[in-house]
Length: 411
Image (cartoon, rainbow, N blue to C red; front, side, top):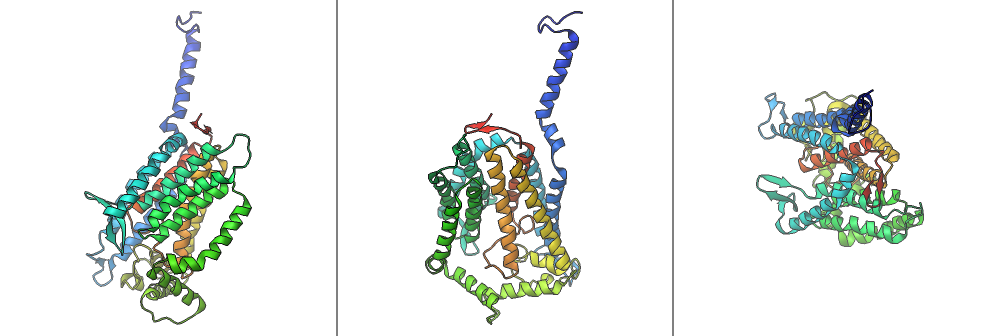
């Protein structure tokens, strides 16, 4: 039998080895990753986004003319465009190995810090706060990508600091992670943007907790936080933020309000939710929604539109879908072989979950109004793209869950 002069194998053996190498390359390529992509989850995420587009169409519907109103007719089209771009971005990001995410983490973190500092000097005003940067026709809210950048930086930090012998990390390592979290959180809080600052801190602390910080430190931090509440209320919060807290307490304790100012939004939201009943009034049939009784119903209070038109069943159904996505994402984190993959997935999931839970509690009057959009549903550009990027990271962790990483990156 003749042999290949270059390899020393028979032609048959050489061809088998070539075919095997080709198959192995294909398994590592993007087509194999696309084949292993959990398309059910991808379609579910996109489907939730389409619910938001449909709700924005309803918000802009004029019941008198039976046509979209001229002022809000473009909201759903803009959201659909952003959702489409975000969907493509999510899939592309999912194809990136975790090692690439880790190598880009500090660059993203430093870039976000620069943007947050620039907001302090060149930010444009909106809603009484300077939170946006305008670069030509593009308006960017740097606090939104900061959510993902902080998650990546803290996860990368722990990946490098984790001891190989399985021992617990010393306290100073966790304090270093806390500094990484609090620097951008402080810059965001200064804008002022309390809601995003809380989200950055909460998702970051979830990473610190799952990185193995001792329970005594967790308990101490909780007790210190509770003890600091009066001082934070008196000296840290802005007057309008204290008024929102007062409104919440008045609503919970049953005290009467004048139905104006901060209490008006909550009371109208409760009316819209109650009007929906069990099954809702039907699509495009919400009186509170169509007559714009609820302020900010296209952003922070869009859940009232869902509750009025689809009732208790529709609202619980949507929140159940969110809960399923969160459970699935945490399972992805638990099955990941690298600390970076686990912690980055936990951080991204916690960020989306925090906004979902807080927005729902805010609309129901159980939490103060802090400007928390409902992920994938509320109208927004940077916020929607950031959420889709977070899901892209989670999908990447799923596809690359067996990727091994050392303290210096992937093996």
